[in-house]
Image 1 (spheres, rainbow, N blue to C red):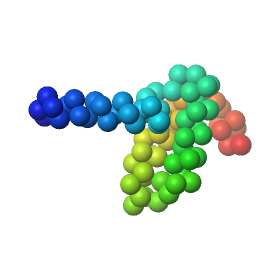
Image 2 (image 1 turned 180 degrees about the vertical axis):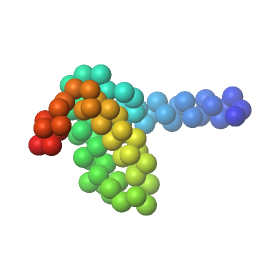
Image 3 (image 1 turned 45 degrees about the horizontal axis):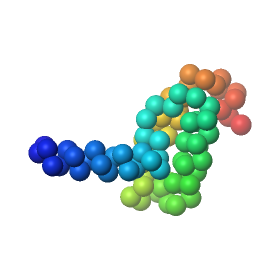
Amino acid sequence: MQAVAIENVVHHYQEICHSVPLHPIYNEAEYDHAIQILNELLDAGGANEKHPLAMLVTLLGHFISDYERVHYTADETAH
């Protein structure tokens, strides 16, 4: 990848991360924020696997799931 293309990717990734937490979740505040964003993405159509937001929903869902697996029991996440 050329330097200009990499700079472009970095810029767009940083812009997306301002709105969507695309990184591991480390605390309850980040978790709550990620859940809120996930719900908004789902409401916008991201639940449809053919929707442009579907992959973003999947990625965010993985970060949420990883956090829940470490910090919650199965009973707590079922509510």
